[in-house]
Image 1: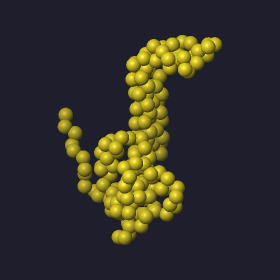
Image 2: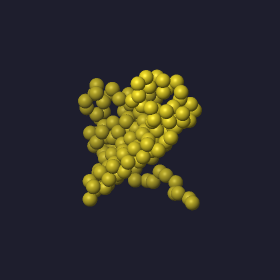
Image 3: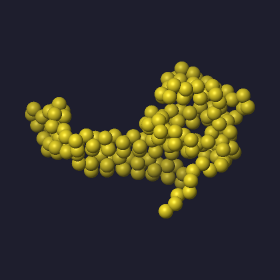
Image 4: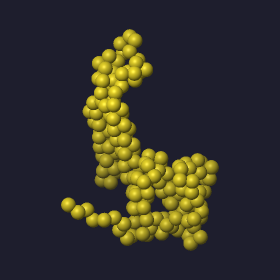
Length: 173
């Protein structure tokens, strides 16, 4: 049942992205592209020369919907990773924490600094100073760390603690 629900979630995300990409109209450049693509002499540089502000807005909206859909998929995977031992037992092993950090790094590449800080702050997982410096010290994404360093950083106290305390406000309507 859980696998089916997860597969349905990812399938629904894909459907949302495809629907959005198909329905965002754009402007004159998109209109012409949809009707003249494949004709002799009509190519991408010509289409780009007739793009207007509406084409730019539609392109930005398509990019954002794809970016947020991928972030939602990574967030779902991150939540499933945490729900095993993290939220149930209150701690993560160094290997699980390293995998969690990989998912956090993937999220960081998809989000602005502010968006990422809001999401990352809600996780409430213990982090060592070494780990923070290695991954987040430069305020840029450092994904090469996961390729250069095969073993996760050790926590002097053993496992990494996960807080059970809620860190979000109640939704008020």
